[in-house]
Image (cartoon, rainbow, N blue to C red; front, side, top):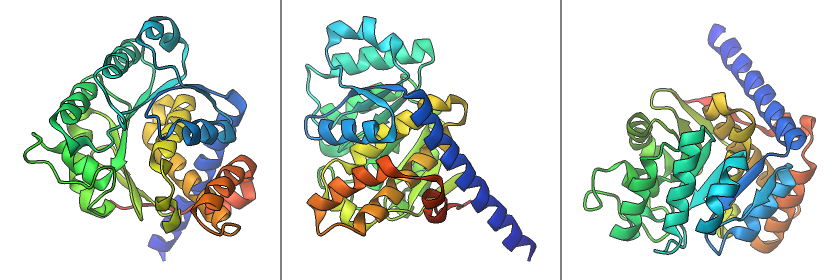
Length: 283
């Protein structure tokens, strides 16, 4: 009986936190700089706009010193990493670390090449606030070398999110970041506590850049609550998942789901969100 009451109280608290963060993003409209891949820019920008944030796809190294100090948060995504894009990412991450601006890393396909792996390892040294990836990416990044890292199919995961719990905890402990793993259950950890967000629909995996988009949303949530990055990351994952569930009710396939997901995120109200959010402590 006591356990049931405790669980119910926890559920209500997560619903309250999540709506509070949604409201803060809409009220404050945080400026989120995204240095990201060519495939994901559109969906990331529209996700941020629909949530109430202000996206800025500022990639040029020459602009970093002037622009990045003014942002609310930074989102780095290595999906189409190149030798010309990496210096801007490093410069922006370094500035954010120095200025205490929250930033989020998406280590897309980190084990695809030594160049990509080494770049992500270097970026982690600049202390990201949150690292979000799929299970294979998080397992790989938590490994000590590319040779011992988990094989992946490009940007697709060959592991379930629950397979990566221990790797995520290790990465959080060694990097100091909150680590989020996307999957059927999204998991988030600070190295000790592990929380699960159980929202979303399988068809979201058939839309390119949904993972990239939710990373940007995490950056927006962290921007308005820097001191509670774990809560912000879990809430962003749940909100994006709820938008997918609502969009799925009107969708006929991946393309229409993409449209309805964005519309659902934009129109999300307190009652609807709180009746759908499903966040639990896993350990």
